[in-house]
Length: 580
Image 1: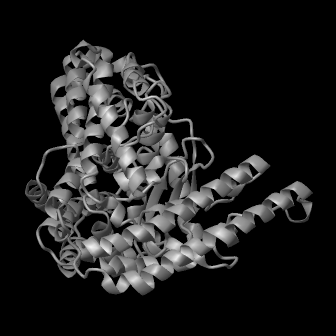
Image 2 (image 1 turned 90 degrees about the vertical axis):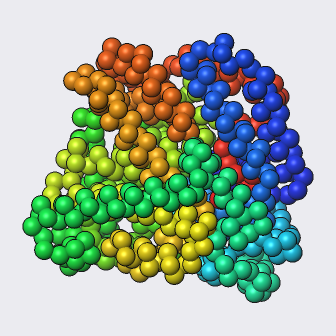
C-alpha cells in the first residue's frame, strides 16, 4: 500500500497494542479451523497464514519501534519514494489533493512519534549504531531542504507550464503548501533531533546481539527471514561452505578461459576493457533496456506464463545514491497509482565492469523479482495476504536462481558473463557469513570488510555499502543463498525423479504460481506435486497463465478474515513499521 494507508506504519504504543490484539485474534481464528478437512490449496493458505500470524505475534516481543531510522529502509525513504516520480504526485482533483494532504499529515505524526520512541530507546539501551545515523543524516537533510532539487519538488516538475488550467494551478499550489508547511519541516525536525540529541548517545557497537534481548531477537529475525529452524551457527557454516564451493567454481572457470591470474586480476582486466564499462548514466540505462529486449525473446524457452504489468527503468534519485544498491526493484503499488520500477544507481556502479549487469537484471527484473512478484499480484483469486505478502528467502532465493539461469537463456555467452553470475552467487553466500558473523559472533565492522575484500572482487565503496546494509537490516542478507539452494535442490530432485519427463517450464510454473511462501511449506508443496504425477501435469502446468483459479485458495482466508470484521488485510511486515 502507499504510505499512510496501512496500520503497519503506526509506531505509537496504543497502535502497537491494537495491532497485537488483531494478530492474536487472527491466530486464534485460524487455529479454530479444522486443517485436515481442507483441500490441498486451502491447506497451503492455512499454513502460510498461520505461520505469518505466529511470527507476527512473536515479533511484538521485540521493540522494533524504538529504532525506526536507518539509511537503507524505513518510513522517511518510503514516503519520499511514494512521490519520486511525476505520476506519483499527479493530483488532478480536490479529492486526490485531500488524500495527499492526509498522507502527509500521517507522515508528520509518524516522525513525531519516531522521535518520542527514539528518546525511549536511548533510556532503555535500544539505539541504532552510530555509523548508520551518520549515513542517514545527509539523506534527511536533502529531503528537508526547501529547494528545487528536492525530490518532492521534482515530482511536481512535470507541470504543463503556461497551459495549466486554473484548477490545475490551484491544486499544484495546494500540494506545494503541504510540502512547505508539513513535509519538509518534519524531515528537518527529524534530522535536527538525530544530529543534536541522538547521535552523541548512540552505540558504537554494530551487533544486534549487543542489544537487550539481542541474541533471541536475532534468532527470531533469522527464522522469519529463512522460513526454517536453522540456527545462526548452522547458517554461518553453510555460508562458509558455499563460499568455498563457489571460489572453486571461479578458479575452474578461469582455468578453462586460460587466464593466468586470480579472480581479482580477472575483474580488474574487465574494468579496464572498454567493452565492459558504462561511464554515463544514459549508457548504463540503455544497457538495461537492451537486456530487457533480449530477455523478452529468450525467456519463453524456460517460462510459459508472463505478467501483464510492465516496469520502468530509472536512475536512482541523487538524495539516496550514497546508500542505494547498484540495482533495485520496487513493485507497483497495489492500487496501481505508482508503477513497478527498476532503479539503477550509477554512483554504485562506479567503474564496475558491465559483466555484472546481466545477472543484476535477471535477478531484479525478469525472470527475477518483477516476474515472480507480478505473477503473484495478478492472482486475483488468492487472498490478499498471499497476493501482497512475501517470504524473504523465497523471494530473494528466486531472484538469485533467476540470475543463475542466464546461461540457459544464452545471455552468459563467454567466461566474462559466467564470471558475473558466479560473483552474484558468491556475494549472496558471503551474506550468510557476514550477517551471522556481525550480529551473533562478535565480528567488528572492519573484520566484515576485510573478509568481504578477501573473498570477492569489490570496490571499497561497494564493500562499505554492503556491510553497512547488513548492520542496518539484520537477517536480510541470509535470505538469497538459503532460498537459492532450496530452489536449486528442488529442481535437481525433480530432474532425478522425472528423468526425460522433466519439463523446466512446468517446474518453474509450479514454483512461482502460488506465490511466495516459507521454504518448508514450498518443499512440502513441491513434493506433493512430484508425488501426484508431475509427468502427467507437466503440460497443463507449463501452459498455465497468471491469474488462473485455485480451488479453495480464498475460502480459508475468507473463513479466517471474516471472523475479524473490519480488520484490514494482513501483510507480513514487522510490528512497529521498522524496516528490519
